[in-house]
Length: 222
Image (tube, rainbow, N blue to C red; front, side, top):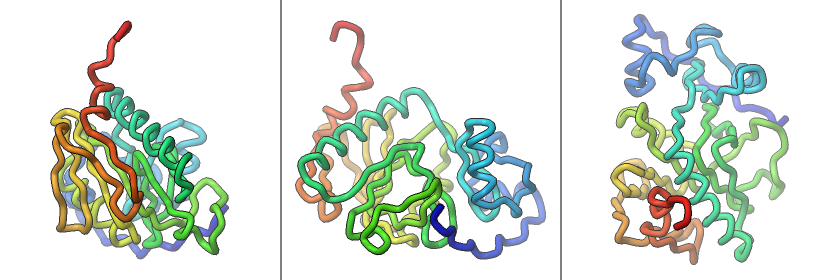
């Protein structure tokens, strides 16, 4: 297993409200109380996944269950397909889906719905081994779920860029839009009538969003 970066000591939370606010005002049902908030480690992330089959992120020493949903999964799988097909023809790096648990260089453990890591970003130019590799994610993609709050996603975007990301895509399957971030405070919103491009992260990649979101309208025999 790749060495996990030691995260900075989590700030002291005086109340449950303080804790939830620091995590982005997420629903309390997504916060694990064992181990106690502030004391969890990457080993606990793996333990919960192995024994309970629940994906958790590690945020300030707290296990936070990843928000998931059926429609979000459909869009995620579709987008992974398009990126994977592009990489088959342009060997730029590696893509992993929502099971790809990654320790950011800052010490936080996050699980983007899709992560693209360029070969040039691999430590020593080699594919990492182990269940929680330490990596800078060149492109992090989050497909929004109902329990994701704006504050939570704002925090995630900042963390990805702090950890070395070059682009972050927030996919809203209900509005059928993608917010493309080139920095924590720089973004554009693309509608389903526009095309999502890989820019300098996936040069040459272009996906009409109408094609991506068409999966939501698919039915037997169509």
